[in-house]
Amino acid sequence: MRWFGFGFNAFGQICAQKEKSDEGEANTTEVKIISPTELSTTVDGSGCSFKTRKIQASWSRRVSLRGDGDRCVFLAGFKSFPSAESSGCTDAFISESHLTLAFQDRIETWNLQEEDKTPSWNMEISAQPESSVSLPAGVNLPLAPGGYITSKPPFYYHLSAQLKAKSLALGGGHAVLLTAAGDVYTWGLGSHGQLGHGGLASEEKPRVVEALCGMPMSSVASGGWHSACISDIFLTEGGDLYVWGWNESGQLGLPSRGLWRASQHKSSQQSGEKPEESGTSLDGEQQEEDKHEEVFISIQAFPALLDVSQSCEIQKVSCGSRHTAVVTNTGDLYTWGWGEYGQLGHQTLMSSDEPQRVEFFKDEQMRVIDVVCGTWNTFAAAIKKDDAYS
Image (tube, rainbow, N blue to C red; front, side, top):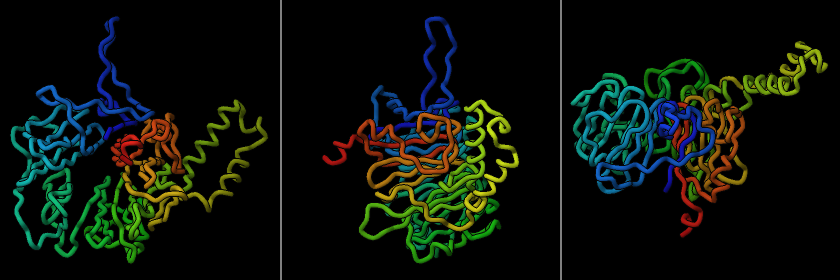
């Protein structure tokens, strides 16, 4: 399995700094990576390379979890690794301020902004028969026994034992939880419809998304101000994708007024004509926009079914701040939303309110098997198609 990254790279979280040239030029970091670029092989202290099993990303950092028996983590991007012993780590969760590591017997949260010698918070893991978390094996961060972990003090929050949480996605200010029964609960900030309850009110406690009741879900994801989930269809290799929340940058894959205006402006610039020269007035542009008024969606407060591709189903979903990425059961990667840093992987800096396949992996005869969105970037794991069927 090989990992690729694209998008925001100002701190070298995708590609490290370029080496100093013979002419004496200072080291530079390519800020925008517009095409999927393979991550360098991580090297441990013995000089041996190892494979990456899992990746998590924040705005300025990436944490990679080693995939062999002696599991440990590698941190790329802003700041160096804290004074933590990560050997035996089974899971990792990162934010801009803290790194949380899970082990067989404990969980530790380290401050990435300080050079502390001890974790900011920790808890011992023991058997809890009435736990609110239903995990098949080990810890699935940010879930923890009896509750979940955030990036701000007091770090640990209790969850009702009745929820039986299976997975949890933390967004910019909201949370999306999946239960063992396939129900979806949300809470937190709701100002952009990201909770999916039909309004813009915030919720202090987990509340079931009633629009999804009766349809078991298999996974959930959350972005800055939007959310997504995949339905659990019996005896299939994927499901349907549901999205809700803010659509300002087309991150829901629904028609965006902002992107329509941007495309109209770009068309005028490319033609080199002013509105009056091309025979269209500002009033005419407004009339044209009014024709699309019922189509544009700024906020989708209820979950909406998104048809990414008619020929396949969705297996994985991940959300960045204002973009979304999915993996289909055919091994294709689709992305949409804000693309200012190349995080959509289409070799442009264009945003899109329509799901588009990342052609790089098809051209390389590769099958994508996982995707993880950072705030402004995207990471995808892929294998050669020949290996997928061997």
